[in-house]
Length: 95
Image 1 (tube, rainbow, N blue to C red):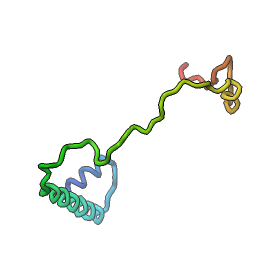
Image 2: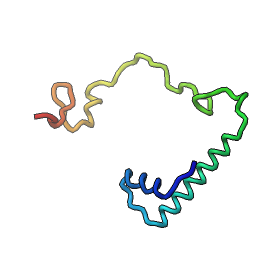
Image 3: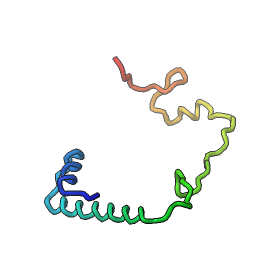
């Protein structure tokens, strides 16, 4: 598989990019180099490699969900531009 100049022009049009002729040629060469490298990866023997969803082992780094005391309302509303009846007052969005 290879990329042609008209493919680059098509993608540029979809992305609403105005490319010079030099940019079209450069991007065509660069994209073809990427595809050639990807094809080279297909030559690797991966029969003994298990499929994975990610190359690195990831674990959940989120803290435990613990019930704890919340902030007092006075502290919460200290930096609020406006507050009314214990709620943030914001400009109306709907008529």
